[in-house]
Amino acid sequence: MIVIGTDTHKRTHTSVAVVAGTGEFSAELTAAAVPRGFAEMLAWAEGVDAERVWAIEDCRHVSGGLERFLLARGERVVRVAPKLMGAARRGSRSAGKSDAIDAAAIARAALAAGPERLPAATVDERAFEIKLLLDHHDDLVAQRSDEQRRLRWHLHDLWPELDLPAGCLDREKWLSRIARRLARAEQTRRVQIARELVGSIRARTRRIRELERELTSLVAEKAPQLLQLPGCGSLTAARIIAEVGDVARFSSDAQLARLAGIAPIPVSSGMRDRHRLDRGGNRKLNCAFHRLAVNQGRLHPAARDYLATKQAEGRTRMDALRCLKRHLARRVYRLLTPTTTPLAHANNAASLT
Image (cartoon, rainbow, N blue to C red; front, side, top):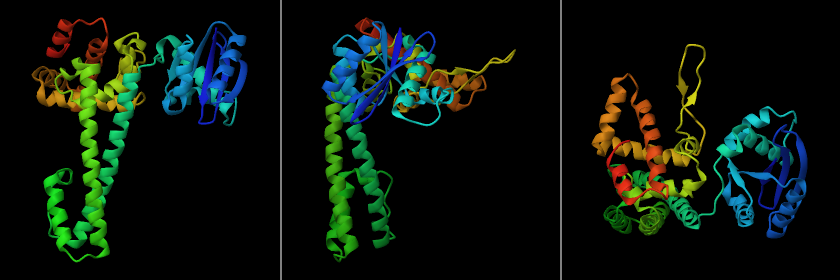
């Protein structure tokens, strides 16, 4: 069997075939990142070995087209997180950097992790649609926050005595009040810029709320059981759906926890048995689980009791939250698994474990 590591770019994709048993280089091909090039890569791979696994770096904005092409033709594709490639590069005898070296590092990282343990690539159009909308929503929120900071500095220069509470620039009442005050002021350049910022913040806020309503509707259609989970709002559920995709690509909840950087890493030695924090994984998914854990610590009695028990054992609050996140990864996996019945959904949503 061979593992075909593929380094994807906007215009070209480079694939390197590595023998699974020995890890040695077998063949290499660079093709255009268009359907004609995808077909060329598949024909090349068929000539190298009939038993193969495609390992593609998980950067779906440039690798999505190739993934969909291969999956539509029955190929086995796994995604390799960029963080996994560091160790493969350090262990390589090839100095320097090139597309072929990167592709070989992807293949060897997949071999080191075990292709069967990596999340398989799947085509879930609804999850991808949610991801696109959510990423756009997050970009708009970041742009609005930047504009709000700039507006605050302009307003401070104009009226140092003006007290603006935290979060007030998200609300129409405060934006209208500021707009009226700016309209009455002398129309200096600073005032004109501040008025433009108020208008832009208003427009972004309207669009953000439209996207939130749209995401709520899509999540309710795709995975309503997540919204029954205490502390799981529509945006948190949307992020989980967007990053997990088709849960069938995970063989267990442990694999999902590893992807999210939630599963602790063993670092035992001799008689000393301990684990350390996993700083890898999908950080957006990790953030969604962290928000969920924090919300449950405030709102859900069972989660509050669990956190209190862990802290009574001598753990810090953050360590207790990490333990809770691991439980939540198991619950989310069960909720998203298609074989779970509606009654089981309700029971899972009502209990901690």
